[in-house]
Length: 332
Image 1: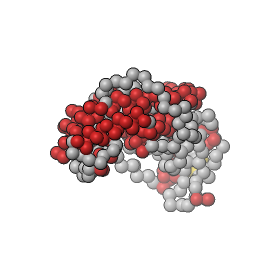
Image 2: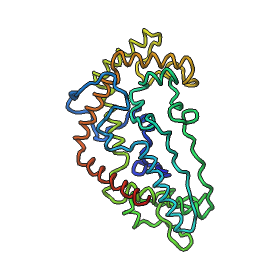
Image 3: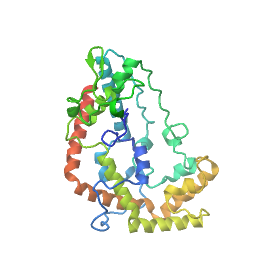
Image 4: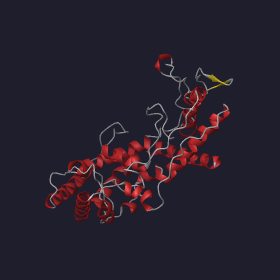
């Protein structure tokens, strides 16, 4: 239950790494507020066709692995349950499900540059569900528990079906702010926290004080680095070579690895024979031009630049992330 129920930047929680990768592909606004500065950064070592599981990027130190994200989701659910218990409600929300054990679930950058594993391409094409154990490529979400009207008010900080004054129920960005925010709702003789138990659990874990760094900050930096890398001349050059290789393989007009499935009409049969043939050619072309090696080196360079530019905020974020892990350990 990492997401708060009111979608706004200050409260949205970071998604699991698979969702993060999808967002990276779409690009994101520059957290620094401007275009890339200083020209194209110099590159370090450019590895030859590295396995995506071996790629280490600077922002990895500030983002949760899938296992960490699942653990923190369960801790947040535990905080919700404790809050609900204060009002006399036994509550157990849908527990975030862990992915299957194995390297695939912890390969942060498995699809950052499109499909890259030749063995997987030959076996499953573009069907990501085959690696994650998800039905139809989507993890089944357990149903939310049914709540009585009183329990609903405690969970959400507003009455079911009642329009809050001004169109929005009282809420608070941080626990510090929540201490002085009146929800206007009382259940069982106790005042309900602003935003309800769902928001309280989020704030306790991710926004306890006014100096709490927005959970989306590091997400934004990683997205910006990827967006800059896509515009880099060295990536543009290797993409042009990959596209030419795909043309020669009979798959014409595909300019980016992110466009293959839609561009070739594979959406409805990502693991079928045709998809496997395309995926095999896709990965072979990537390896011929060392797309993953070049792009990973460029991505790393832009991340290093952004880490340096935002060093102070990232240091604070890391301290707060460590504190969250300590709280999670204390809560069991």
